[in-house]
Length: 144
Image (cartoon, rainbow, N blue to C red):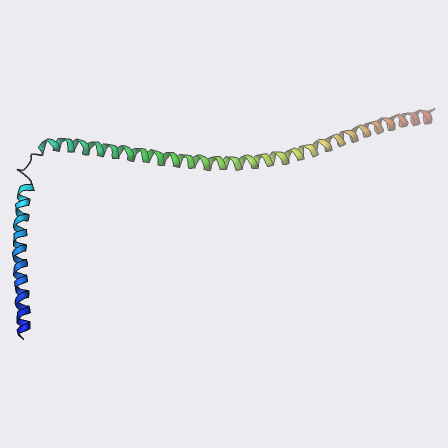
């Protein structure tokens, strides 16, 4: 038991010694902070004007950046509109070209049909002239 009491006493002595050392350290820390701490309050009022000027410049730059972003977005939208219009017009052009090619085929067919009809008319005219001539010859032969 004596041994435990001795150990407890030694432990308490150590605790007291550490508390004393801690107190000394706290005093030294406070003194150091007093020496190193801030001096008298500084007057920062001259800097306020500079700060306000910089804030206003930042605000102006932010507004300008927002305007530029808006212009870029508007340009992108306009480009998309033009791309859509171009694609629509291109599809319309292809459709019109296809119609023109179809009409050219029809025109070619009509031209061939017309040429064929003109040849038939010429043949019929020749045949009519031949028949008239034969009719006149028959009329002169019967009448004579």
